[in-house]
Image 1 (cartoon, helix red, strand yellow):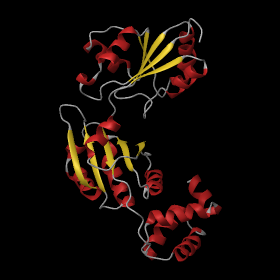
Image 2 (cartoon, helix red, strand yellow):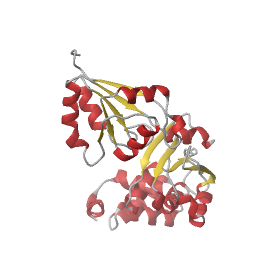
Image 3 (tube, one colour):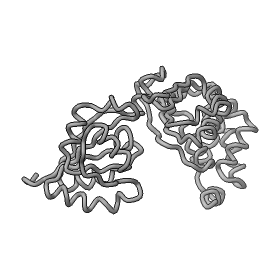
Image 4 (cartoon, helix red, strand yellow):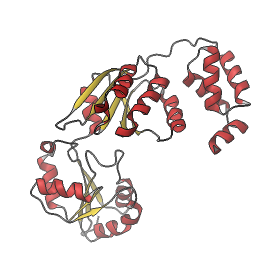
Length: 292
Protein backbone atom coordinates (compact mmCIF):
# COMPACT_ATOMS: atom_id res chain seq x y z
CA UNK A 1 0.00 0.00 0.00
CA UNK A 2 1.14 3.53 -0.68
CA UNK A 3 1.96 6.08 2.00
CA UNK A 4 -1.39 7.80 1.49
CA UNK A 5 -3.50 4.64 1.59
CA UNK A 6 -6.61 5.14 3.66
CA UNK A 7 -8.56 2.68 5.76
CA UNK A 8 -12.13 1.67 6.47
CA UNK A 9 -13.05 0.72 10.02
CA UNK A 10 -16.20 -1.43 9.96
CA UNK A 11 -17.60 -0.66 13.41
CA UNK A 12 -20.32 -2.55 15.25
CA UNK A 13 -22.58 -0.22 17.24
CA UNK A 14 -25.15 -1.01 19.97
CA UNK A 15 -28.41 -2.70 18.98
CA UNK A 16 -30.12 -0.87 21.83
CA UNK A 17 -28.07 -0.48 24.98
CA UNK A 18 -25.45 2.27 24.55
CA UNK A 19 -23.33 0.58 27.21
CA UNK A 20 -22.51 -2.11 24.65
CA UNK A 21 -20.32 0.23 22.56
CA UNK A 22 -16.77 -0.99 23.18
CA UNK A 23 -13.93 1.39 24.16
CA UNK A 24 -12.15 0.36 20.95
CA UNK A 25 -15.21 1.26 18.86
CA UNK A 26 -15.46 4.65 20.57
CA UNK A 27 -11.79 5.34 19.93
CA UNK A 28 -12.17 4.36 16.28
CA UNK A 29 -15.12 6.71 15.85
CA UNK A 30 -13.22 9.52 17.56
CA UNK A 31 -10.22 9.09 15.24
CA UNK A 32 -12.15 8.74 11.97
CA UNK A 33 -11.91 11.50 9.39
CA UNK A 34 -15.42 10.68 8.21
CA UNK A 35 -18.28 8.49 9.41
CA UNK A 36 -20.36 6.76 6.71
CA UNK A 37 -23.71 6.04 8.32
CA UNK A 38 -26.92 4.33 7.28
CA UNK A 39 -28.95 7.04 9.05
CA UNK A 40 -27.05 10.27 9.81
CA UNK A 41 -29.54 11.35 12.47
CA UNK A 42 -29.33 8.10 14.38
CA UNK A 43 -25.54 8.02 14.18
CA UNK A 44 -25.43 11.69 15.16
CA UNK A 45 -27.34 10.82 18.32
CA UNK A 46 -24.89 8.02 19.08
CA UNK A 47 -21.88 10.30 18.59
CA UNK A 48 -23.45 12.98 20.77
CA UNK A 49 -24.14 10.43 23.52
CA UNK A 50 -20.47 9.44 23.38
CA UNK A 51 -19.36 13.09 23.52
CA UNK A 52 -17.98 12.95 19.97
CA UNK A 53 -18.30 15.26 16.99
CA UNK A 54 -17.24 13.91 13.58
CA UNK A 55 -18.26 14.63 9.97
CA UNK A 56 -21.05 12.21 8.97
CA UNK A 57 -22.24 11.24 5.49
CA UNK A 58 -25.18 9.02 4.59
CA UNK A 59 -24.55 5.60 3.06
CA UNK A 60 -27.69 3.53 2.61
CA UNK A 61 -29.22 1.09 0.12
CA UNK A 62 -30.53 3.89 -2.09
CA UNK A 63 -27.31 5.86 -2.50
CA UNK A 64 -24.41 3.49 -1.85
CA UNK A 65 -23.61 2.96 -5.54
CA UNK A 66 -23.44 6.73 -6.01
CA UNK A 67 -21.21 7.28 -2.97
CA UNK A 68 -18.59 4.59 -3.54
CA UNK A 69 -16.41 6.42 -6.07
CA UNK A 70 -16.05 9.58 -3.98
CA UNK A 71 -15.43 7.63 -0.78
CA UNK A 72 -12.74 5.49 -2.39
CA UNK A 73 -11.18 8.73 -3.63
CA UNK A 74 -11.09 9.97 -0.03
CA UNK A 75 -9.34 6.75 0.93
CA UNK A 76 -6.79 7.45 -1.77
CA UNK A 77 -6.06 10.75 -0.03
CA UNK A 78 -5.32 8.86 3.17
CA UNK A 79 -8.64 9.28 4.96
CA UNK A 80 -9.86 6.91 7.64
CA UNK A 81 -13.57 6.21 7.17
CA UNK A 82 -15.72 4.67 9.90
CA UNK A 83 -18.53 2.56 8.44
CA UNK A 84 -21.54 2.06 10.71
CA UNK A 85 -25.17 0.96 10.31
CA UNK A 86 -28.18 1.93 12.40
CA UNK A 87 -27.53 -0.84 14.92
CA UNK A 88 -25.28 -3.87 15.18
CA UNK A 89 -22.64 -5.01 12.70
CA UNK A 90 -22.59 -3.44 9.22
CA UNK A 91 -23.13 -5.55 6.06
CA UNK A 92 -25.39 -8.06 7.86
CA UNK A 93 -28.69 -7.08 6.21
CA UNK A 94 -27.28 -3.55 6.10
CA UNK A 95 -25.43 -1.41 3.50
CA UNK A 96 -21.66 -1.29 3.06
CA UNK A 97 -20.81 -4.26 0.85
CA UNK A 98 -20.16 -2.20 -2.30
CA UNK A 99 -17.90 0.22 -0.43
CA UNK A 100 -15.90 -2.50 1.31
CA UNK A 101 -15.46 -4.43 -1.92
CA UNK A 102 -14.34 -1.34 -3.84
CA UNK A 103 -11.96 -0.31 -1.08
CA UNK A 104 -10.34 -3.74 -1.00
CA UNK A 105 -10.06 -3.78 -4.80
CA UNK A 106 -8.28 -0.42 -4.65
CA UNK A 107 -5.77 -1.79 -2.15
CA UNK A 108 -7.01 -0.06 0.99
CA UNK A 109 -7.12 -1.68 4.41
CA UNK A 110 -10.49 -2.71 5.80
CA UNK A 111 -10.45 -3.31 9.54
CA UNK A 112 -13.15 -4.94 11.68
CA UNK A 113 -14.09 -3.37 15.00
CA UNK A 114 -16.39 -6.15 16.23
CA UNK A 115 -19.18 -5.86 18.74
CA UNK A 116 -22.96 -6.12 19.04
CA UNK A 117 -25.08 -8.13 16.61
CA UNK A 118 -28.75 -9.06 16.92
CA UNK A 119 -27.91 -12.38 15.27
CA UNK A 120 -25.48 -13.61 17.89
CA UNK A 121 -27.43 -11.97 20.72
CA UNK A 122 -30.55 -13.92 19.77
CA UNK A 123 -28.70 -17.20 19.26
CA UNK A 124 -26.98 -16.88 22.63
CA UNK A 125 -30.26 -16.79 24.57
CA UNK A 126 -32.50 -18.93 22.34
CA UNK A 127 -31.76 -22.23 24.05
CA UNK A 128 -31.80 -23.83 20.60
CA UNK A 129 -28.87 -25.90 19.26
CA UNK A 130 -26.84 -23.46 17.19
CA UNK A 131 -23.37 -24.92 16.71
CA UNK A 132 -24.26 -24.49 13.03
CA UNK A 133 -26.75 -21.90 11.85
CA UNK A 134 -27.96 -19.99 8.78
CA UNK A 135 -28.74 -16.29 8.74
CA UNK A 136 -31.60 -15.57 6.33
CA UNK A 137 -32.14 -11.88 7.08
CA UNK A 138 -35.54 -10.53 6.05
CA UNK A 139 -37.97 -12.80 4.22
CA UNK A 140 -39.53 -11.61 0.94
CA UNK A 141 -42.42 -9.18 1.34
CA UNK A 142 -44.73 -10.90 -1.14
CA UNK A 143 -46.57 -13.94 0.19
CA UNK A 144 -45.86 -16.28 -2.73
CA UNK A 145 -42.14 -15.48 -2.76
CA UNK A 146 -41.96 -15.80 1.01
CA UNK A 147 -43.65 -19.20 0.97
CA UNK A 148 -41.35 -20.43 -1.80
CA UNK A 149 -38.26 -19.32 0.14
CA UNK A 150 -39.55 -21.06 3.26
CA UNK A 151 -40.34 -24.23 1.33
CA UNK A 152 -36.69 -24.41 0.29
CA UNK A 153 -35.62 -23.99 3.91
CA UNK A 154 -38.07 -26.43 5.48
CA UNK A 155 -35.55 -29.31 5.64
CA UNK A 156 -32.50 -27.21 6.59
CA UNK A 157 -30.91 -29.01 9.58
CA UNK A 158 -29.11 -25.93 10.90
CA UNK A 159 -30.77 -23.36 13.15
CA UNK A 160 -32.24 -20.45 11.18
CA UNK A 161 -32.15 -16.76 12.10
CA UNK A 162 -34.56 -14.26 10.57
CA UNK A 163 -35.14 -10.53 10.96
CA UNK A 164 -38.70 -9.31 10.53
CA UNK A 165 -40.53 -6.01 10.46
CA UNK A 166 -43.20 -5.51 13.14
CA UNK A 167 -46.03 -5.05 10.62
CA UNK A 168 -45.22 -8.38 8.92
CA UNK A 169 -44.52 -10.61 11.91
CA UNK A 170 -48.03 -12.12 12.13
CA UNK A 171 -48.19 -13.20 8.49
CA UNK A 172 -44.55 -14.31 8.44
CA UNK A 173 -44.96 -16.50 11.51
CA UNK A 174 -48.11 -17.98 9.98
CA UNK A 175 -46.21 -18.85 6.79
CA UNK A 176 -43.20 -20.24 8.65
CA UNK A 177 -45.51 -22.40 10.75
CA UNK A 178 -47.31 -23.67 7.65
CA UNK A 179 -44.05 -24.63 5.91
CA UNK A 180 -41.99 -25.88 8.88
CA UNK A 181 -44.74 -27.40 11.00
CA UNK A 182 -46.36 -26.05 14.17
CA UNK A 183 -44.22 -28.24 16.47
CA UNK A 184 -40.82 -26.76 15.50
CA UNK A 185 -39.08 -25.07 18.46
CA UNK A 186 -38.42 -21.34 18.11
CA UNK A 187 -37.61 -18.11 19.95
CA UNK A 188 -38.68 -14.57 19.09
CA UNK A 189 -36.62 -11.73 20.53
CA UNK A 190 -38.21 -8.28 20.65
CA UNK A 191 -36.20 -5.11 21.35
CA UNK A 192 -33.10 -7.09 22.37
CA UNK A 193 -30.87 -5.21 24.89
CA UNK A 194 -33.39 -2.35 25.13
CA UNK A 195 -35.57 -1.29 28.06
CA UNK A 196 -38.57 -3.32 26.84
CA UNK A 197 -36.67 -6.43 25.77
CA UNK A 198 -39.02 -9.40 25.61
CA UNK A 199 -38.19 -12.99 24.70
CA UNK A 200 -40.95 -15.36 23.57
CA UNK A 201 -40.15 -19.07 23.57
CA UNK A 202 -42.20 -22.04 22.41
CA UNK A 203 -43.19 -23.87 19.28
CA UNK A 204 -43.82 -22.06 16.02
CA UNK A 205 -47.52 -22.74 16.48
CA UNK A 206 -47.46 -21.15 19.92
CA UNK A 207 -45.48 -18.12 18.77
CA UNK A 208 -47.76 -17.63 15.77
CA UNK A 209 -50.82 -17.69 18.03
CA UNK A 210 -49.16 -15.28 20.48
CA UNK A 211 -48.38 -12.83 17.68
CA UNK A 212 -52.02 -12.87 16.55
CA UNK A 213 -53.37 -12.33 20.06
CA UNK A 214 -50.83 -9.96 21.62
CA UNK A 215 -50.27 -6.60 19.90
CA UNK A 216 -47.09 -6.05 21.95
CA UNK A 217 -45.28 -8.72 19.90
CA UNK A 218 -45.34 -6.37 16.91
CA UNK A 219 -43.78 -3.42 18.75
CA UNK A 220 -40.09 -3.01 18.06
CA UNK A 221 -37.19 -4.77 16.37
CA UNK A 222 -37.69 -8.52 15.97
CA UNK A 223 -35.25 -11.42 15.61
CA UNK A 224 -36.53 -14.97 15.18
CA UNK A 225 -34.52 -18.14 15.81
CA UNK A 226 -35.98 -21.42 14.55
CA UNK A 227 -34.58 -24.85 15.38
CA UNK A 228 -33.16 -26.83 12.50
CA UNK A 229 -35.27 -29.50 10.86
CA UNK A 230 -35.23 -32.94 12.49
CA UNK A 231 -34.05 -35.91 10.48
CA UNK A 232 -36.36 -36.36 7.53
CA UNK A 233 -38.99 -38.95 8.29
CA UNK A 234 -40.23 -41.38 5.70
CA UNK A 235 -42.76 -39.79 3.41
CA UNK A 236 -46.37 -40.85 3.66
CA UNK A 237 -46.13 -41.85 0.00
CA UNK A 238 -43.40 -43.56 -2.01
CA UNK A 239 -41.05 -40.98 -3.63
CA UNK A 240 -41.75 -42.36 -7.09
CA UNK A 241 -45.51 -42.05 -6.64
CA UNK A 242 -45.21 -38.53 -5.24
CA UNK A 243 -43.01 -37.56 -8.19
CA UNK A 244 -45.54 -39.00 -10.64
CA UNK A 245 -48.41 -37.06 -9.07
CA UNK A 246 -46.42 -33.82 -8.95
CA UNK A 247 -45.43 -34.26 -12.60
CA UNK A 248 -49.05 -34.75 -13.66
CA UNK A 249 -50.27 -31.73 -11.75
CA UNK A 250 -47.36 -29.56 -12.89
CA UNK A 251 -48.49 -29.97 -16.50
CA UNK A 252 -51.47 -27.77 -15.71
CA UNK A 253 -50.42 -25.80 -12.61
CA UNK A 254 -47.51 -23.64 -11.41
CA UNK A 255 -45.02 -25.56 -9.20
CA UNK A 256 -46.23 -24.04 -5.92
CA UNK A 257 -49.88 -24.92 -6.61
CA UNK A 258 -48.97 -28.38 -7.94
CA UNK A 259 -46.96 -29.03 -4.77
CA UNK A 260 -49.76 -27.87 -2.48
CA UNK A 261 -52.33 -30.09 -4.21
CA UNK A 262 -49.98 -33.10 -4.34
CA UNK A 263 -49.37 -32.73 -0.60
CA UNK A 264 -53.11 -32.74 0.06
CA UNK A 265 -53.64 -35.83 -2.11
CA UNK A 266 -50.75 -37.90 -0.74
CA UNK A 267 -50.24 -36.64 2.79
CA UNK A 268 -46.63 -35.71 1.98
CA UNK A 269 -45.13 -32.42 3.11
CA UNK A 270 -45.79 -29.52 0.79
CA UNK A 271 -42.08 -28.61 0.91
CA UNK A 272 -41.15 -32.15 -0.18
CA UNK A 273 -43.56 -31.95 -3.11
CA UNK A 274 -42.31 -28.48 -4.01
CA UNK A 275 -38.69 -29.67 -4.07
CA UNK A 276 -39.71 -32.37 -6.56
CA UNK A 277 -41.60 -29.85 -8.70
CA UNK A 278 -38.55 -27.58 -8.86
CA UNK A 279 -36.19 -30.45 -9.68
CA UNK A 280 -38.47 -31.61 -12.47
CA UNK A 281 -37.91 -28.28 -14.17
CA UNK A 282 -39.60 -25.39 -15.84
CA UNK A 283 -42.06 -26.07 -18.62
CA UNK A 284 -45.02 -23.84 -19.33
CA UNK A 285 -46.23 -23.90 -15.73
CA UNK A 286 -42.99 -22.54 -14.29
CA UNK A 287 -42.75 -19.81 -16.87
CA UNK A 288 -46.31 -18.79 -16.21
CA UNK A 289 -45.65 -18.65 -12.46
CA UNK A 290 -42.49 -16.60 -12.78
CA UNK A 291 -44.31 -14.19 -15.02
CA UNK A 292 -47.25 -13.90 -12.65
